[in-house]
Structure formats: structure tokens, C-alpha cells
Image (cartoon, rainbow, N blue to C red; front, side):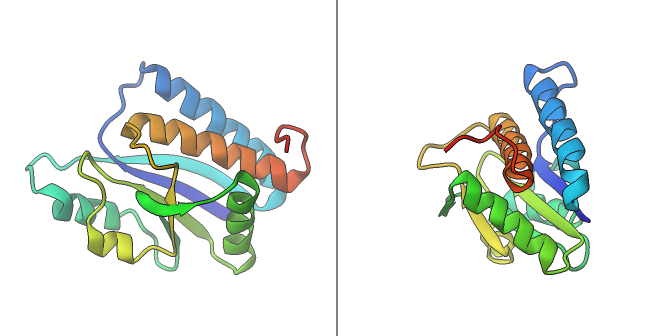
Length: 158
């Protein structure tokens, strides 16, 4: 079973519209992924209250990475993957015996380069920069989409 963790800098208000979308997609992911050895997924939020910048955020995010976990950094300089390729990457982590996959979403200034360099995969959602909260929604939807692709569900249409 590949447990998924989204470790993100910043707090999302419980009543924010993004929060409802994230919970909906991660719930769907857990339900669809269970039979595939994927999930559950959780969001862990960290916050640098002392204003230490990217290096302090990296330290907080690093504490959320279990030993042996696949590390996936979200970064505008990352690889552009199709949804089927993203699904294949998740399946590869699972099939390689990884028990955890941690997706890292940095703060307003992005991820510390040293943390980004530790990643097994650096992923981009395109050349545009997206707000962190929206990136969480997009990632949650892509996790659900990946599970449906691997399950052979018609949710993803080519």
C-alpha cells in the first residue's frame, strides 16, 4: 500500500472552498485506490512562524518525509507529465515497494533547492505559477485521476 502525504507550507482555512474540493478528491482517491494498493492520502500543513524563509520551510517539510518515502517536489521547473504518465509514476513507486509518497508544496518563494534536489521526481503543472491552495486542489484531483486510470475507469478520457 502506497500511502500518500501532501506536505504543504501554509494553512488553508477549513471553510475555504479549496478545502472542500481537496477533501472530496482525496476521499475519492482513497476509495478508488484502496483496491490498487494506493492511499489513503492526507494533507499535512506546516508554517514557518519565525520567518526563516525557504530553508526553515524546508526543515519543517523534511520532518514530514518518512524514511524510504518517494519524494515528489512540485516546482515550476519540474517535468510536465500527462495524467497517464503521472499514474504510471505512482504505480512505479508502489511496485518498487515504497510504502509512502510525499508531495512537497513550498511557500510563496517555492522550495529550497536542497530539498528539491532530494526529490525522486520534480513535477510541474505548467509554465504558469499557481497559488499554493489551487496547486493542492490540482494535485488532489490528479491523484484521484491517477487511481481511476490505473483502475481502468472511464473518468479519464483520452
